[in-house]
Length: 254
Ligand SMILES: O=C1O[C@H](COP(=O)(O)O)[C@@H](O)[C@H](O)[C@H]1O
Image (cartoon, rainbow, N blue to C red; front, top):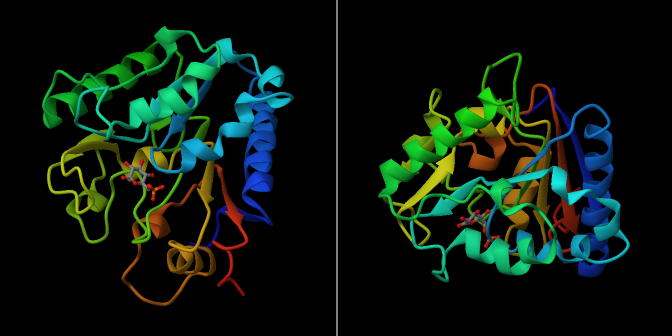
């Protein structure tokens, strides 16, 4: 959409992309923690986690005070934490176990609850953290304002568990909601809603490889159709949306 600050950074190789992602994450961490002591980060599942591999290595790993990090999930599958489909498990094994974030600052969903219960519980947890001043609030919309969302998209343009043509795209009030008919398995998930995603200070949208080239082109260059992909509904009124692409994902851009 027009109006927001959006920039597109393209890397030749997968290693260069991982390096750039680590460098920008350190930059945003330093910038935001000049004024406050907490740094709130939201992770997606998918291949994003593997792209964070350089952040857990020198020099970047030593440039971050990990005790300031508070980690959330933009979406989660309603499965046990040790299930192969768990986004928590993916992030834990690929990223979180490699850095000294205090365990109490890693906010996984409650895997003993059903989808509705888990969504309500996660929303209540975020509300409590807002009340305690850990998570900021958007002065414009009053939705929680996370410092940095590190996200990926699917080939259909979905982000989080917000899928094309699904009624959840219209959610305007809830912070966290649930889906029981996700077109991508597993079907039962919880997800942050667009008002929360759109209140972010920064979003890094990380896309590599050829699977999402069409979605990237449509979202970055825009088109005149009314049929917006979920990722085209990301609009940060008071934030920065940065596309971090490898040359394959960017190969259809003009
Ligand atoms: O199901 C999901 O898919 C998206 C994209 O994943 P990818 O495998 O195409 O990278 C992911 O962002 C989301 O968190 C996840 O639950």
